[in-house]
Amino acid sequence: MNIARQAIDEEARSGGPYARSLLCGLNGMLDTVFDDQRFDFYFFSLSAHRDDAGQWANYGDKGKGFAIGFSPALFQPNQKTPLPCPTENAFVGQVIYGREATFARHRKGVRKLAKLAEGAANANP
Image 1 (tube, rainbow, N blue to C red):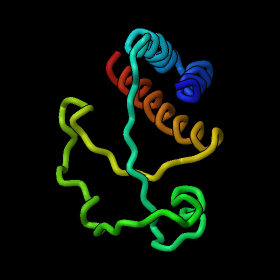
Image 2: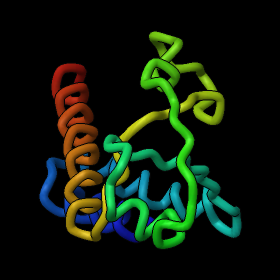
Image 3: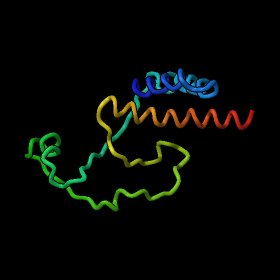
């Protein structure tokens, strides 16, 4: 959450007035929405390579674990549009490790949101 806040703050400082207004509101909303609430994520981690030594060392109890194989088709989306309630949607994506890479990923989404806000406000004064 701190990394997301940093990306929001950075874009709010450098963006236009409409983006700044939206992003400052979003940042304040994070406090209200997630204040004293548990924000759960559930991960199911997979490897693209079936015999990766690093995976066995880090996640397979140093080679003493076991592997279960799944068909890649199992992880294809089964719906074309997201459901209205975000908690009813499943997401399949790559896990990004490290603060810098995570910040860059958050910043990309925040910048797109800022650009959309500015574009919509300027097109519809």
